[in-house]
Each structure stands twice: as structure tokens, then as C-alpha cells.
Amino acid sequence: PLILGIESSCDETGVALVRGCELLGDSVASSVDQHVRFGGVVPEVASRAHLEAMTPTVRRALDNAGVKLSDVDAIAVTAGPGLAGALLVGVSAAKAYSMALGKPLYGVNHLVGHVAVDQLEHGPLPKPSIALLVSGGHTSLLLVNDLATDVVSLGDTVDDAAGEAYDKVARLLELPYPGGPPIDQAAQRGNPKTIRFPRGKWGDGTYDFSFSGLKTAVARHVEDADRQGEPLVVADIAAAFQESVVDVLTRKAVDACVEHGVSTLVISGGVAANSALRALAAQRCQEAGIELRVPRPRLCTDNGAMIAALGAEVVAAGLPPSALDLATDTSLPVESPLAT
Ligand code: ATP
Ligand code: MG
Ligand code: FE
Image 1: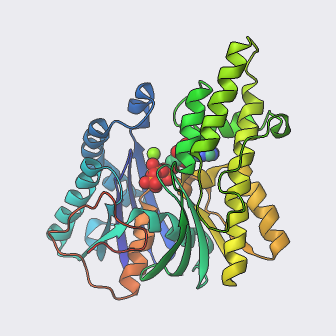
Image 2: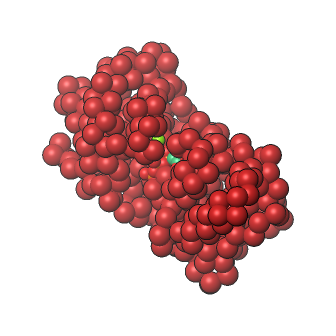
């Protein structure tokens, strides 16, 4: 079946066409430029941008895939989690397509979509796999027995998400929003050994994470340098911050694989685009004999392909479609791949 996927949970309007594990075409429109001067996503601005971008983005995705709307067999849409007004635009569009085409509608989970997208790059995910989901709003370790029906959360952040930590630290260092890419770049010129930042929840025997103490430590470091009139060595701070983040993330992810006897780790979500995370994970997985799967950076950040990929899984599993009164759920739990 040909799945049309629609994503609008935050500031990317993403649309894609997927058949099984094959990505036929996709298109992403981002309103990030409109949020830069506010240092974060402004929900009302994002909603309006989705409204304007939705129809042209669907059109571009269909053109890229070389298919017609009438070829579509099912529509998958992000039902949550995300911003209420932003989600509503995608869900409303998906309902309209579902009704107009007479094809089933599936409201799916954005977070599980981040994991499912890897199938478009590396083929079917072995069952079970461990997934490290690191995005702007979430940081979770998942035991994925089945993408459509059985996702178990092993641990979560107790405060900030990994991407949120990047964004907040970038602001402290006066780097632009979103902070992940500029910190990634600055860190490549820095020496991570010049400063030792704390590793939150390191070796605490859980799969939970904490990044707010790290952010506070960076803030204190910046204040101290200011007070003493010393120049800020942004590259070193970025490198040391990043090393603390990726050290804990990769350690706990590998530990979870070992404890659960799972030989595949998939890392996904916007922060999976990070070069240091990809490099350290590759090294530690190799040492532990674990197969590492990380989608290409373009598929790590928000897009429609991830939603179509999960939609394809849900359809293949024979799960019932969502009703046409499907509601958005701003805090849909990661253990619910399909919204009810
Ligand atoms: P969620 O998926 O939790 O709802 P989101 O959809 O806003 O949140 P994503 O689009 O998956 O999040 O990821 C965005 C985050 O990824 C931002 O915090 C951004 O700073 C971060 N990010 C992007 N590229 C990189 C990078 N190279 N290194 C580190 N972080 C990055
Ligand atoms: Mg975004
Ligand atoms: Fe996301």
C-alpha cells in the first residue's frame, strides 16, 4: 500500500510518500527562520506557517514521488505529541484527504516515527531493537519489540531533553537558534578536555537522563569567565558540553542493549544528527558487538517520511484506522505508536 504521511507537530511541515520501507518522495517546509529572533518556536507563528505550507508541500511530495493523490491507499498523520495548534493543522488536512479520497486515516506517534524512519534507510528493524530517541523535546531509551504495537520505555529525561540542552547552552554561548548545529560545528574546533562538566545521572543504575545540571554548570562557567574578564573560549565549552551529553547517552544506550540481550541500537531524533554522538556511538557499539543504525541527518530532524514509515508499519500490522473525529494529543505517550 502507498502511504501518505503528514507531519506538523512543531515547526516543520513534512509530507512524504512511502511504500513499505521505500521512500518514494518527500518534501519539508520549515518556519524556523520566523522563530529565530524569538530564540524558540512561537506556537501561533508555527500554526499559521503550517496552514500556508500544507497544500504546496503535499503537492511537492507527490511530484517528487511521481504519484497522484488518487494512488494513495492510506493517510498517516502525527496525532501527537507536539504543539496543539500545529498538530491540528496536519490532522485537519489528513482528515480532509481521508474523506475526499475515501481512504483510511491513521493518527500516529511522532516519537515512534522518529525511530520508524530508520527503516527507510536500513530496511526492517530487527525485533527487538533498542532505540535512543534524542530530540528537541524528548530523550528516551526504548525497547522496541514492534514499531506498530509494542514499544516499552526504559528511561527518560527527568528534566531537559538533550536537544533542549543544546538549544539552551547555545543561547548562553550566544550561538544562533536552533543550537544543535552551531554547537556541533564549534565543538569540532575545541578541546573537550579543557573543562570537565558534570555527567548527569551517570552510573545511577537507571536509564534516565538529566541535563539541567549540565546546563547550569555551563552557565556558571560563563558567568565566572565574565566576572574575571576572561575571554570565552566558545569552542572548548561547546566541546566539553557535548562530550558530557554524548558520553552519558551512548553509555546508557549500550548498557540497555547488553542488559536486554539486544544486538541492534537505533539512534534517532534531531540530536542524532550530531557528529560527536554518531562517532562515539559507532565506537562504543563496535566495542560491544552491537549493530548501530542512525538515519541520515535529513531524516533525523522532523519530516513527513517518518510519519509515513510508521503509517506503513501500522497498516502492515492490520491495526484499525483512526476515527474521523481523531483528536490531537499534545502529550501522547511514546508507548502508544497509534493514537486512539
Ligand atoms: P520532539 O521530536 O521531541 O517533539 P522536535 O521535533 O522539536 O522535538 P527534532 O526536530 O527531532 O525535535 O530535533 C530538533 C532538535 O535537534 C533541536 O533541539 C536541535 O538543536 C537538535 N539538533 C539538530 N541538529 C543537531 C546537531 N547536529 N547536534 C545536536 N543537536 C542537533
Ligand atoms: Mg524543528
Ligand atoms: Fe521531532
